Length: 486
Image (cartoon, rainbow, N blue to C red; front, top):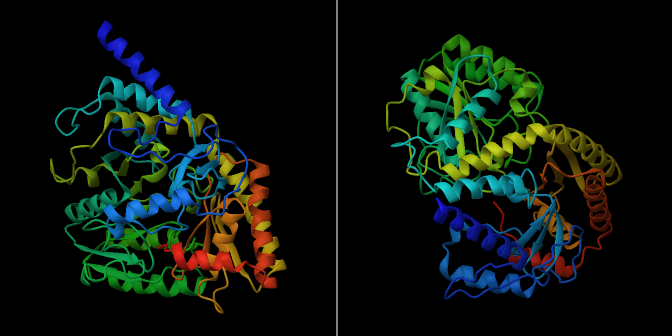
C-alpha cells in the first residue's frame, strides 16, 4: 500500500500545481495558450475586445482539426478558467457566467468537494467496466437517484454517458415494456443526437439528411396557452386510442426552443390520458433538472410523476460526462441484459462526482437559492421589458432556467446582437430558440443577489442601446463573423 499512497500523494501534488500554475496544454508537442492572469478574479473585467487574439488563434487551430458539426460557437471566445460564478477567456477577460456550460456547471467553478470526490475515486480505480463488474460508486449514485426521483413507487436507474444516450435508452425501455414503437414528441424539442434521441427531437432541421421522417415519431406543437393545451390534448387522445403509441416524450420546460413554459394543467391532464390508454410519460430533465427550476425536477412543479425521467448535464456539476434514466422498476427491467449499456457505464470517478453534487445540492439548499434568485431576476426582466417593449418581447421561465425573448421582427440577427453586446459588457449568456431570439439565462445555481441584479442591469443597458440605435457597428460585425448558435 505504501507505493499506492505515494502515488496518490504525488498525483495530488501535480493536481495542485496544475491549478496554481494553469498547466493547460503542456503535453509533449502541444502549444499552450494561457489567459493573461493565472489568478482568477471573481469580478467582471473585459479589457480585451472579445473575441481576443488568443481566442481567435485557438479558433483557427480548431477549424483545421475538428469537424464543423462539433462547433456552434456563440461568440468566438475560448473559455480557459473559472471561479465561483465567473469564467475567464484565453485573453484574460472575466465574465459573469450566465450559461454554466449549457447548464452543466450547477455549482459554479472550483468546487473542491466534487473535484476531490472525482480525484479520490480516480486514484483508486479509473474504471471497472460496470456491466461486467459492479463498483460501489455507481451503486451509491443509483441509490441516490432512485431516492430523489419523483414518484412513490419502486424505481430503478440505468446509468449512461450523456443525455442523448439516456433519452434513447428511455425509448428502448418504453418499446420493450409496451410492445409499441410509436412516440409522440413536440416541435422544437431537443432530446439529443443519437439514433433514437435525435429523431425524437423536433429542433429546427437537425434531422435533415440524416434521419428521414418516420411514422414512429409523431410531432405535436408544445402548448403554451390554454387554447393550445386543449387542442393538443384532444389530438393526443385521438392518437392514443389507435393503440400504437407507447409514450409521450416531453421537456417539462422546453429549453432550446427558448424556455417555453407549458400551459397550466397540461401535464396533469396529459398524465390522465396516458394512464387511460396504457401509455407512458417520459420526461426529459436533462436541462431543467438538478435544482435548476427551484425544485429537484421541473416536473415537481406539475404535481405528477413520470414513468421515466432522464437526467444528465448538471448531474456531475460539469466535472464528468454522465447521465441516467430513472423509472418504474418494471419498465426499466423490461430490457434484457446488455440491451442498454456502455463500456463506461457506472464510471467510478464520474459516479463519485455525481453523488457529491447531489449531496452538495441538498446540504447547501442550492435549489432553494435557484428559486429565490430566479424570482428576483425574472421580476427585474419584466420591469426592463415594460421599459423597452419594442426590444424585449417577454421574460419567462422558472428558477434559474430563464429566457428573455428579443424582438427579431425587424432584424433577424437582433437576438445574437443583443447577446454579443451583453458579453462585451461582461455577462456571458447563451442564445437559442427557433429564431435564435431568446437570451439564455441559466447561470450556476450559486449566484447571489448582487450577481442577479447585475444580470438584470446588463439586460437593461443593452435594451436601452438597442432601442436608441447605439449598438456599436463592431458588435454587429462580430455577430456576422463569429456567432453561429443552434
